[in-house]
Length: 264
Image 1 (cartoon, rainbow, N blue to C red):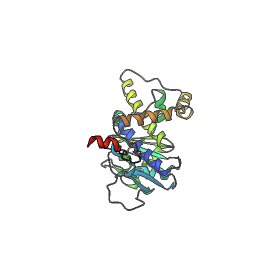
Image 2 (cartoon, rainbow, N blue to C red):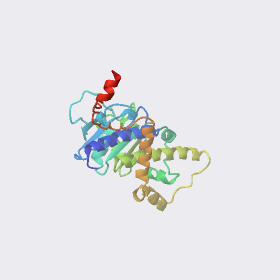
Image 3 (cartoon, rainbow, N blue to C red):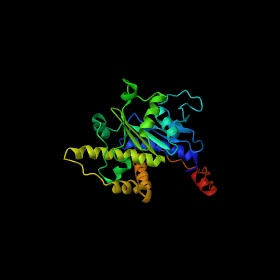
Image 4 (cartoon, rainbow, N blue to C red):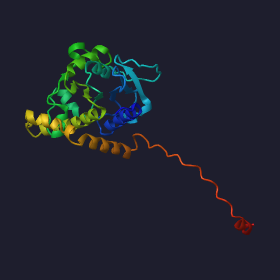
């Protein structure tokens, strides 16, 4: 994608989709690296993701400072995005969420384990990050650059990092991949917690993990999923509204002199 305007609409829709699928609620956010300026990224103003539009997006440098002055409220945890983009040039999109499905794992520091094929998109046993280890008692918000740097360091070369007692941060090579990983990993977490009540989970083999994680790269699964989720947003009354078509003004009908006389 090379059209920045279209990319902005896609990012707004990404926020709508992840909210509509129950991964985000009033909190959390999805960002993307700027198409034309790799040292910048786009993120909405402080707003519930379900309501985000392209007009809400703010352009930031990698120190998470607005490129242009703005008076609107901004997300306090935007350093999560800036520091990951700074540390990982290959990352093009970031999602930070607090999906309910993950909370049992985060509260007990239980490893994320894929239990179905599409759940492998989150990786096997991705790293944990505990803010307390480095910063002591905090309100758990990641608001300081050094906190964002620490989180990015914990992410390392992985695509997802679990944040104890807080949430999850997901990265992707595109907005659509990041959305796919955020949604499918959350579904896997839900299935994993359910499966753990029945007995030990049978793990994937290393070969299966590699092959399954590449499913979206060798099938139409990514495009199909995006279209499906976008349709669900539209059915829910959200997402971009179709542009009204311009129609030529109707010309007044010519008067028929004979019929006009009969009506008199």
